[in-house]
Structures are given as structure tokens and as C-alpha cells.
Length: 178
Image 1: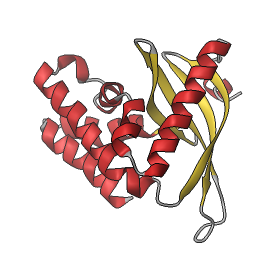
Image 2 (image 1 turned 60 degrees about the vertical axis):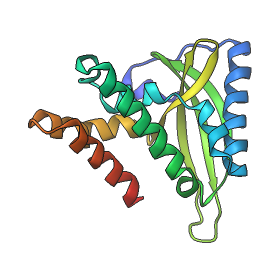
Image 3 (image 1 turned 120 degrees about the horizontal axis):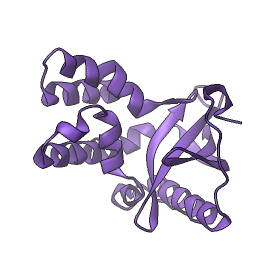
């Protein structure tokens, strides 16, 4: 099981929720592949993403700062969708389980094999906002990508007294390197 190594045991997800989660993921993938990123971002929880990137500071931030970071995340993902998906042929969705406040969908990212001959196992974290499931995190080798940005980029800058803008610039730079 995915989270056995961390001691977190996955709980079952209801069949109705599984159906909705897979529908959300399939629709997001469909609109991304069609190049309609405005429709695709409807399936992403940018507030949740911003909370993960700013973990440890989120509750201390003003509503304006929170809104600015949510907008930053939305613009960054919309801008990077074409690059992120450039080599991606499709996502093959697998088992779904609960992990804390998220559900995790085991996923195989299948790439265009013209440059690299291997696919990547990832996990997609989703949360339920109201009645809708939305993507909030991608786990690579069981490590949250956004949580890693918080730990490696955001926290060190803010701990040394840097500004939120400096932290966001460091996050943007990571996306530019990819």
C-alpha cells in the first residue's frame, strides 16, 4: 500500500466518490490535451495549492496576501500547462485511497517515448471543496511536489526574514527550470 512506509493507513473511498474523482481527473486530462487550459483549471484547487506552498505561514497571512498567492498559483499553472504536458501522452488512473484530508489516486504518467523510454508512477492528491473534487498536489516518489517547494524554497526564505514576493519568485524559478 502506498502509505505503509509512513505509518499512514489508507481508508476506503466510497464508490460514488471514486466515480466522481475519476470523472474529475478524466475531464482535467481531456481539457489539458485539447489545449483548453481555462476549462482544465476548473478541476484544480488553487487555494489548497497555495496553502501547501505557504504551509506554516498561511494562517498568519492577510486575506489580500492569500488572494495574491492563489492568483499566482493559478497563473503559474495555466502558464505551465503546455510545458508540463508537452511530452505527456496520457495519464492512466488506478487505485484511489484516503490519506488524511486528501484522497490519493495512483497514476501512471505515460510519455511520448521519442526522447525518454520510461513512464513515471505518480500519485495525484485531491480534496473535496463543496461537492466537487479538485486536484491539489502531485506526489513523485511519494513526496509532494508543492510540499517540497515549501520546504526547500519558501520556508528558508521566510525564516531568514525574506518577503513573500521573494518566496514566490523562488517558486516561479523552479517552474522555469523545468
